[in-house]
Image 1 (tube, rainbow, N blue to C red):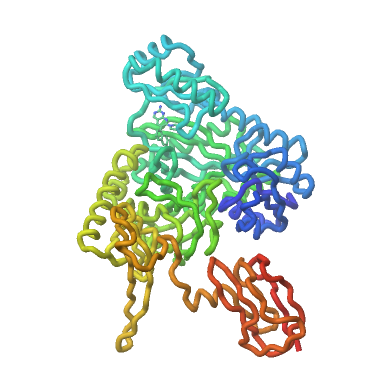
Image 2: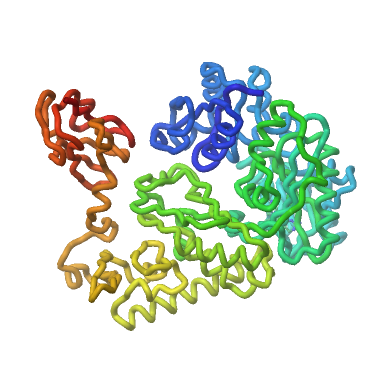
Length: 623
Ligand code: MV4
């Protein structure tokens, strides 16, 4: 087995890999860009190495990362997803340097990078591919001939493409010329290859993919399928396992084909075989040679830790289970909680999480690298957390997901939570009628219309309360005025919300007071306070107490990452328990740090103006 694994990634997937390494007793090496220094993966790893270069590029710097792996004495690299995960050259360089790349071998990664080559391999293995070519096409005449053969619409796809880039749909012969040059141009500029091929275009497919895991001794099993049809502009938003309303026989054929295809490839490691399902037929699309974002739902229905198994098989171990051992159970749903505003075209919304409270609920798992006070950086993808929920059947999973979403409290940034809450109440979703066109062409119309309607109602009433937000992100207990309620932001900007608890004859009433600003009128007419729309609510006693606390041992620590603003005592000074000894600033709020016992200040470990991590020793009080 390896001793030390470098995680060539950041965010929730780096955290996930470190968790699996911990279970296996492996040491971990985190790498980080300068602005990522407060990242959770950095705190969790056994070693931390700083990357040099631009934040947006450093996680792609294979030579720097491999160099760090060698200096740190790591014997394996886990690439996570994105960045270097499907870079065959990087995988080869790792192998040459004697560092195990956790993934299939470089030849397989390289082959699957070519969609034409993938189709050839699968066709030869007897896996159904979409009718079309397995040779590149170059001329308008060739494409027109194929258009006649298969009938329009057809798709022209870049062989090196993926994620929708280099894909052109042609609905009539006249459009062939433009589509061909478009697909070639995109292929060349994004992937460095203008090679394209042609497929019959399916108008309303479902996107269903099969999770596989294979050891390096030829054993391959599948962990059933995931339905990832709910996506927008090729960004998945919600995934479920197993697929709803999938015919038993089709499932058996689909999963068997995935294993057969992987066998033909000589696949090892975790991977995904992507297919389209249309009616009672399925067609191979592509192989993803990485751990995927949505792997947790397959873990939830099979009980198999895919990341741990991926580490074990990379170390040359045999798979410890067989296909017959895998009994899928129940249903799992993943919601991708992104820092994006679903009512503003999913515009990214980076910023500080002034509140971040997880839904603690049985059968709910949250994969995240976020914590209160963490700042979502603009350089990376906007995935904030993955909410993963299991139920004994689809209905139970959906209801649990609704509850969990309503109790997932995030303030400071807009999120996709209101989108998910609304989608889980949408008739088409509930009926299991979700196709790849569902979100963009169908659901978003209803979502935007219902948000606009609520806005009108709020405007007409001339005021709002958190209770008026309805399905757009109201928290279960109604106490929290959350920015996630972005329904209102389309027309009326929320200036500030303050929450109060009022005790009337022992009954506690929760009251939220929100000051509204209509952007169509000058601000001065409306607001006397001058409070900014983004400023956090006034600090409360609990928040101040949370920011810094004393343990009672004389060893005074910070509980959050923050800044030492002022130190009121000197070494040798006598202090009394409860006496104010420092002022600390965390999450842009000041709080007092108090002596936790009577005594004499023995040692001051920090200077004023210094930034410290959570749980740093600040000061020692002795006898
Ligand atoms: C297709 C297709 C329909 N017919 N190919 C989009 C990205 C790339 N992975 C393949 N894609 C598609 N290929 C044929 N012949 C529809 C899509 C497609 C899609 C596929 C999977 C998930 C989401 C999608 C959204 C739009 C289009």
